[in-house]
Image 1: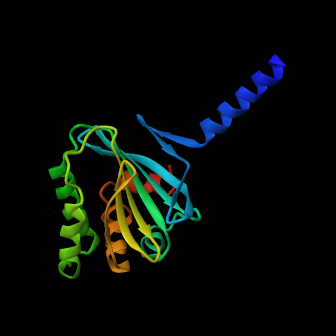
Image 2: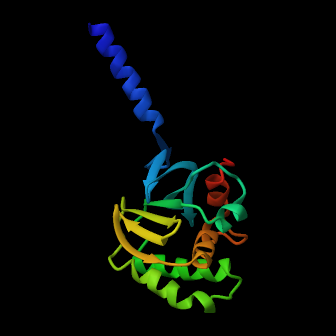
Image 3: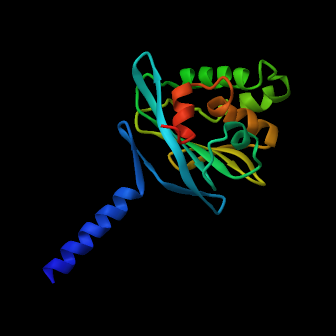
Length: 187
């Protein structure tokens, strides 16, 4: 009986271990579910700035892909999970990074999205703390949703907004080239 119990414990440990991806000091789940759809981690990495690990980021898709533009353009449920690793990431810095990211993602043509960008950034009201988790999710048929530690903070409609939002990480001028590569599974 002890051998059976030990074997069961080992198998459960292996299954639990394989159900997560370790990224720096963060552990990201290999699967998540939003809007009733199951998503699998496509890739994950670290956003660094001046040699500091700012956050771990993971891209979640219905089917794995390494085509950044096809992912960003797709009208499919998908998510980017951000696990905050540094106290250097403040609410103001996140807002600034998002504004800069939208500017780069749209090649400076933010006018059609400006009101929605400001509304989206407004959903990040509280100060950001280490170990908080933000899920930036495009839910097909619903829109782009931001969750903080599992609580929905707001929704922005429009596929055009989603495309710009995901291009912050996956576009031609991403927030971090290394992180983009890792999210695409090219480690």
